[in-house]
Image (cartoon, rainbow over all chains, first blue to last red; front, side, top):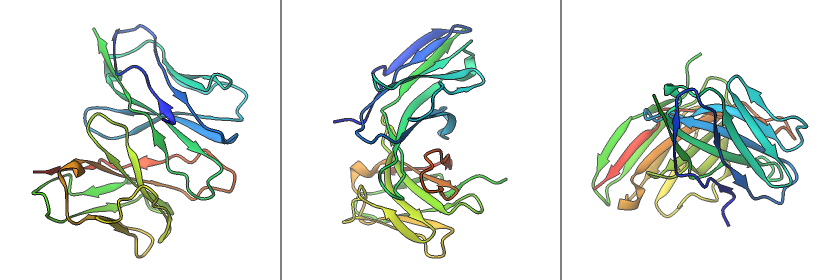
Length: 117
Length: 118
């Protein structure tokens, strides 16, 4: 079973609109962290936002916020007031805490977001 | 602060040839990761080092892939012999040592090496 599922292969959004990118995850570990990364066409992975499984509040970083619904195992990324520079691939990733020192990330397949003027 | 460095940026080889990639992590980062990103997919962890020791290589195809981090700083990833399905971007990432129980441990990624196997 996939651990991270991103169901939107691609999205087109008008500039200045808000956009929600979906992410659901699967783990039996009570301790885990969820990450969102942006990957522009240049290829580098850019960290956007983090949510820990025990965090009481949804994470926010500037125009990015994470809609964390633990019971539904979803961690959707919300980008407010989208800009042309937001066009990129977006990846949801998870780290599970019960693996000792092994803390590599498990990534979803990504969503290709295109912002239209 | 310099980021994660990788070389070469691009490599084209024929199947059954050998290839090596190099990574220099951010200074002071004890943990180093190699990921493989096939076109249209998310990165997949190949191996994780803590200083010069292997922490996780459960997804490394050990019959053809090898990696080392001899002095706990730079790392090399080798493929020998390469197959067509090895065509991908190989990403190196590094992070500070994670305190026990801490889940937030940001990984900083390098620009990647794009490998094409013909």
